[in-house]
Length: 186
Image (cartoon, rainbow, N blue to C red):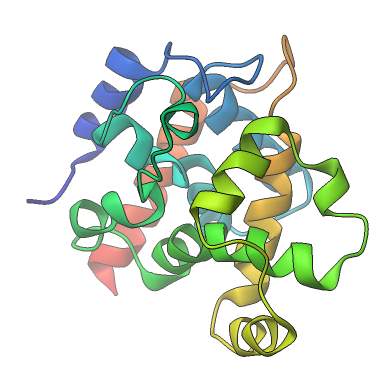
């Protein structure tokens, strides 16, 4: 079953107030901040949509507010894909699918990256398979959309600031709607 634009809005309206995994923001605030960071860097609508929707799986597959504290990897990067695949292009879906592996890669290729991770990101990293080896990082970097996934990951890491002002839900729902419409025409 595909998620409609109204379904996505409903998920954010019903569950967006949940805390974002032990961070000082809600799920909705995190999504809005991620998308705003993407938009501020001049990212395409597809990449802004990916930044906005990258954690939608948390809203679909709710294990509680901080599943990592329970030793659970909720596999959120995969959970939303079957629901989004009928309505969004690969340019949105692949950065979502790859954003967890992007964290694993950044830990391998950026000497200071691990030290900047939040406590919850460190817990989830262990549950998600840990830091990539050099070979795993090289394989990841050769994948289509890997660079976009790295960008989403970096925005994800920065999108945890309490009281940051961003455009609202309607603004990013319009972006997702444009991408859905363009995908339906293509």
